[in-house]
Image 1 (cartoon, rainbow, N blue to C red):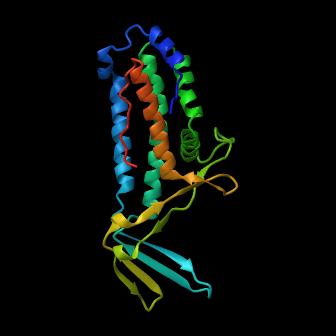
Image 2 (image 1 turned 90 degrees about the vertical axis):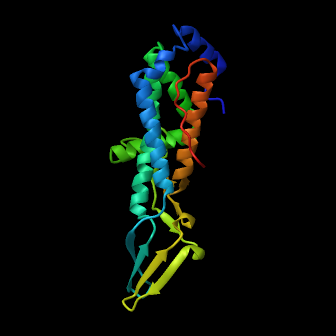
Image 3 (image 1 turned 120 degrees about the vertical axis):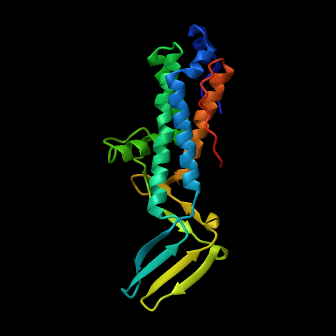
Length: 236
């Protein structure tokens, strides 16, 4: 995916006093970028680590009785959601880091913002991540946001394959205890829905696509002589 036309980048390179100045890698902005990249990679590892301690949830049966479910050995869905939210915000934070890093190279802040926001407008995933991050940070959106969909995170769901279960116990008190031996085989997901409740996409997929958009942009800059060292490794 091309996120910036070559003509614009060639013009930007001409504007720079020294587009390949090696001292940039030692600047405070480079350090902040590396910190953000490390934090994002840590969050990705946390999201993909599904082992945990114990949690419980309840459900009302058709006859009105309350059923209690206990789970051992897998991550609490609430903790999973919190980690996904942190990852969404971290991905969106690359926006400001790009703008500051480009400005450090001698490009006007207005041109920096225009170039970075062009990337966002071309990426559906980044637009949705922007709205999700702002909604989480500010307890909702005051307007329709960038996407015009008012996206929000839905309920976390998880699927436990039979082969990953070590023990399943049905108690006399109508409780069900599930002990998981292979948490790596459990599948967690969290949907993103719009203001009507319609599915927009999977939160993890949107985050990964957003990261790919930033990586593509950084790669385009690097090939044009503006290395920013912003690429973020991630496993799909």
